[in-house]
Image (spheres, rainbow, N blue to C red):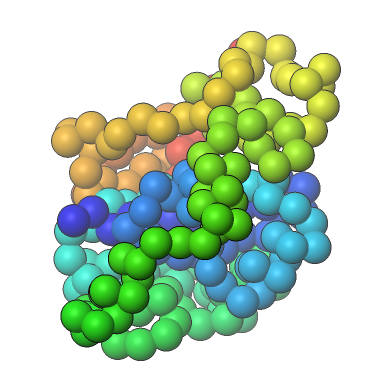
Length: 195
């Protein structure tokens, strides 16, 4: 099972959120208290960057704490995290298993309103707009006449190639590359060249 460690950045306010999910990280909004409140107030105009795809909870904890400390996500006003990302979802211990009874309850048929809401969330059109992308970043825009030049309609749902699993993007200010660990003289992140 893949566990994604990601950074969400609000495109209007610049607030960031470090999180993890086993779902599609481009669809998953994030569940932090401060982050959720921010999205409710300013909308879900968010960019997502996958930092690393992990295979175990221990790996998520290791990388989550690494990035939490590197960027000081708890104390920085630029981050919405209220605690370091340890892969526990902020709730219970890592590796929590649901009881058979809890699993049965989760499998029960949903109400008609819940089913309608799920159908709406799978619609390629955003809640108040249309999804567009430039091949690297995707956004939901409200006015179709404001689609940036060179952008296409639709969402980015590309699987991570096996050659990129467990790798991170680093750059030296001029070029970017994917590696397994941060190298001296390089910093985290990717440089995007736009035309």
